[in-house]
Length: 156
Image (cartoon, rainbow, N blue to C red):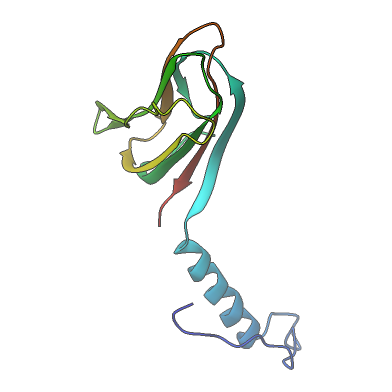
């Protein structure tokens, strides 16, 4: 909080007329302002044991309002392929009626220590989704599997 408002622990809660005291109202207003200036998660996706591409899929949310959002992901190979593998994440969204996207570099290490993460800040039109997709390739008798975690946050 920019202006630290002390917790009114020694103050009365209500005035004689049954109305909240000024100290308590000021305290609650400071909390409301602080919460309005913080990032808030609006959706998440957690997938495990994925062994295929993921077509463009909307991140499940209630209807989004126009505003700035941050989409972040973490992808880790959980089983290496016999020969080689690749997985790459792409986010999509709509800004001013224009379809936009951000593709991230593919994970190609083909070990269970191989991972990738990234974030993109997006301006989203009202009632349009933010989506994700994963491009996938795997070679050999054992297919590569991966885990994917996604977060969508609204920015103040």
